[in-house]
Image 1 (tube, rainbow, N blue to C red):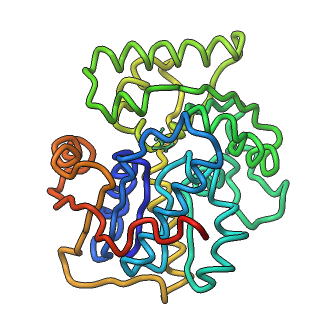
Image 2 (cartoon, rainbow, N blue to C red):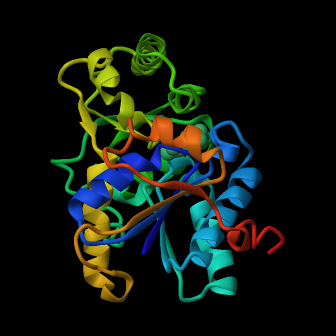
Image 3 (cartoon, protein in one colour):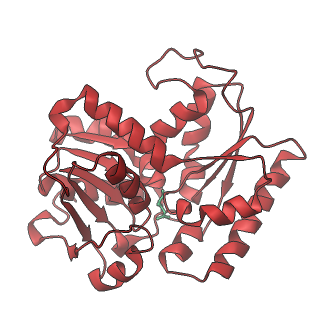
Length: 291
Ligand code: DGL
């Protein structure tokens, strides 16, 4: 089983795309609803919560975990890959949702030479909507600048948006928030045309229609769930030992650190299939808290 981790419901938008692309692959989803939202937390808290979540997924038998959360990927992934995994789980792997987006923006595979970007296809001006922690990490800006320095990138933090989506807020309230954040991003551009945007939080595809309505008509919205599904498929092709294709329909297990009944009520908005939400078995919880 491949593990997927998010602060709450958002990663289900990624799970949906992965399940469509890889219908025979089993997945275990863990939403840290008990500590969501992550976007307003400190980098150290985000790192520790993410590490504990990944450790729980490893304890459930996953050897590959995708951080289906931009905030966790932007803040914690590099440290997990460089420090924690080699020391504690040298044969396990952890991937994120930023790399597929950076590849899409730069039109360049992650390990290609810097500057080898296909300029003609890269956007000139890019907007990134994300949580406050993702914006503060600067991860999108640094990685895009390294790989496609001609792209002008503008970030817009959307504090509270993931939290209000997570809480099941009314459409009108969410529409007003999205309209305000789009307006703030456009104001940063000072009249320059905007080519493309990334919804850089896995909760935002749930309100993509609201972004579409608020953005100028010709702006492209790059799809993180689709890109992540393509990227993971390519990864499994390169690392067949990480894939575990079974019979249809593949098993999907869902765990939460929150209240399974409350989570199940909202989750159907994010993922069309019924998921049997459970709390983590005691032996998996917080096993690496002091690592
Ligand atoms: N869904 C997450 C992301 O992609 C985090 C939202 C939050 O917990 O603040 O950034």
